[in-house]
Length: 335
Ligand code: PMV
Figure 1 (cartoon, helix red, strand yellow):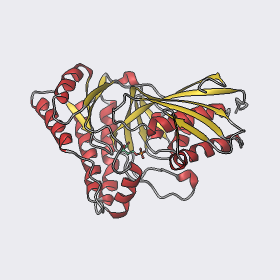
Figure 2: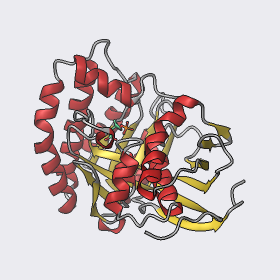
Figure 3: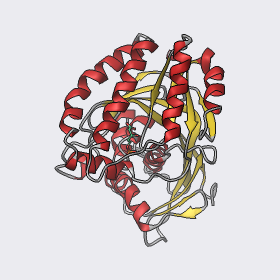
């Protein structure tokens, strides 16, 4: 541990990640450090160009932590989700000062991509460096996880796996020349947050136990497919993981149904390309957008096909991206 950077600020950048094998459901928590422990293992790809940039400084003059996100101060509920990250960094650094945080999502407006993973990963990295903590990527991942489970994976670039307190790197961005093509069906906020939806699934879905019991096998297959750069095998695993996750959620009471007709239409477009021999894996998260994993050489063709689907508002093409990074900046850099 080195000295806290009281006279300076730290800027961190972290990328959005998309799960190829899904996290859905939490393990029982016995204490605050168990927050957001996963009930199932997951596997992800961190994306290039879709990042959160977060600058933080100590603010002993403030009564409380303050986070300004995209120009607006977070309300107490949103701040409350980040608090476990901030409190953990303070505890590790034996510090008491509030943090003053300015954060910007560099995700194209209307992309409909969740930025909580990149946001919590950047927050953990920036505050940990400011506090003088010298955490390993795994330790940092465990801190980011306290804010949002999927944030544990955004610490790492390329492909990451998460199956316990912290995530780990599986393969760097250069491992595989793939693209994630995102068909944006709805860019608005989710009807039901992933946190609420996975809690409700666990409490009320008759399929939750089945979902949990099959997850390890699918994860192992997905991991082997990523390491072997086997897109047909990974595509099969991605589809199963998505459909099984959504099936469990749809069977909750009240049901959690994220799909729209345009989601299905996008899948039909991918299926039509498949008939022509183009291999793609697809996935959906806690929303109606469809994300297709394809060989880089096929990305433009897939983008064109998805852009023509009725109800698809826009299409983004993302390459594998780097893990979180930090730099020390002037104390007034973001203020
Ligand atoms: O960590 P959260 O609360 O953002 O939940 C993420 C849930 C999914 O995006 C649906 C799946 C995943 O593994 O990222």
